[in-house]
Image (cartoon, rainbow over all chains, first blue to last red; front, side, top):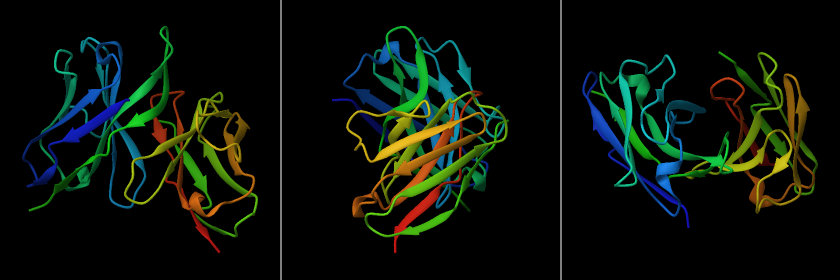
Length: 123
Length: 106
């Protein structure tokens, strides 16, 4: 059974840092791109980061580029999101998600999500 | 960046109704469009991928269609358990989601 479990959320002051973790099981983690997607309270969803299977390629939208860093430890089946210079607009539930992979290609839909971890940025 | 606009933002319907939700992209996304259902307090659940492919385990009352910039999610006969917020997502260029349509029972 595929499982993704995020941890590390909490209350943090503006300008401070926080590191999220997502531990996965039930699939070959080292073969998969992994994603972070967030959802502000009562709002829609926003893609936050992508990382390729060996961790050598990472991608971000402009809203977090230069402040957030995604990384992974394939030995520990874990993907991380280091969030620096946090702003009030970063307040959201952060989900990690697994894309579909047919053994050759990765596709841009997410059938597996974690339960999310809430990050609140406030003084 | 590709913007996704969903309409309506709120939809009230009765059990058994045929329900249609719309999603419009700011440019052609070549059918690279997915639909998710999100119930209160839960993670999103994939319903439809690549415009019209039904995810495993999803009831056949859900269907998707569209092309170019205009896409539709249809529920053929609304059930009480379908009360949720529905999001569309494009993956033609990076990934963007619509703001959602909240579906409630009338």
